[in-house]
Amino acid sequence: MNNFTAAEIYLEHIETHGYAVIENAIDSDLISELMADCYRINPHFSLAGIGRLNNLQIDDSVRKDKTYWFDGSSNAQLGYQQVMEAVRTTLNRNFFMGLFDYECHYAKYTQGDFYKKHVDAFKGRSNRVFTTILYLNSPKKGGELVIYKPKSKDIEVVIKPTAGTLVLFESERFVHEVLPAFDNRYSIAGWFRKNASISGIIDPPR
Ligand SMILES: O=C(O)CCC(=O)C(=O)O
Ligand SMILES: [Fe+2]
Image (cartoon, rainbow, N blue to C red; front, side, top):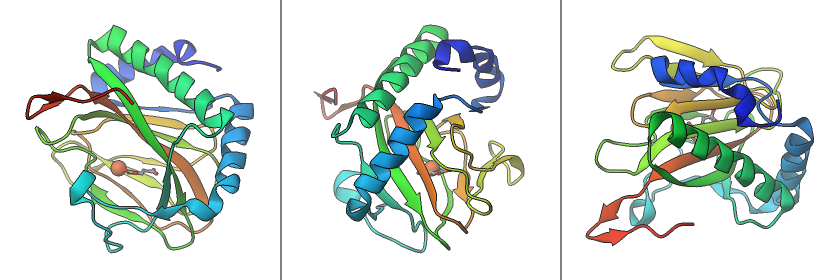
């Protein structure tokens, strides 16, 4: 499956459940290029923060992964952003979501790293609408993504990170966590955003 159009079967799952897990969503050549890009920028990964902008804090009791925000410095990044642009227009066309832009970072979890239960967006406080997670490698064990049922402590789905698997879910709706990694685990976490007007200032496109 080279592009999201071929994955339209998943749109129905998104409509009824608010999320989808799409295996082999991304061309394996692009996955290899993205993985090589991670190795290239490896020394520049930094401890991930929690919260946004000036509220950013580093709290390693909540998350221990290291991240690197896309800066358009490789063809791999540009290629991935192109695929996500196709996903964005597909979601907008089908769900009238008004998704405006996309932000994403590489994430690296090494042995023992985790990300405790959280939501990626709080109602009325964030313009993140849809979360995307793409796995770039396939750790033998550990680092599962656990997604909980809305408004419940029950588990909806446990996802074993596997190269090429793309997970999409509504950012405000799903509490989720990353269980401690055992092997190195590489991924791209991203968010489709809607245009938010904060104090009358419209977000610029990125
Ligand atoms: O890597 C994952 O499976 C999920 C990461 C996550 O929840 C996040 O970065 O907000
Ligand atoms: Fe998250």
